[in-house]
Length: 79
Image 1 (spheres, helix red, strand yellow):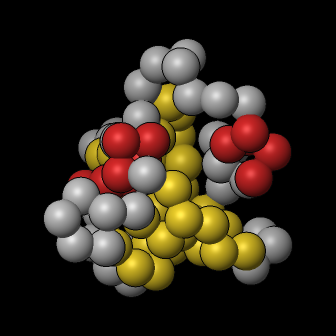
Image 2: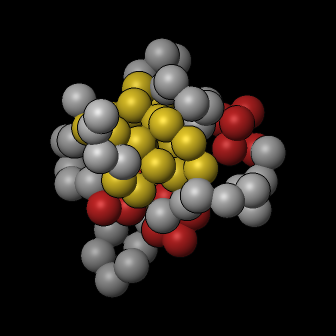
């Protein structure tokens, strides 16, 4: 079994598959944006000083910036 890591711990250009969420406090908008279990993502940019993380959702090629604190709630495994 592969280790799960939160999205805020991934490095730029890392690709991963979303596995689950750390808890149920993540708003429903994240599901609507494409952060669903099984989705393949790529880290495109990480802002310094705890800034946002820019993530590409591969299935629809969208770029979404989320807070680092929100990225910490999304668990994935690297591919």
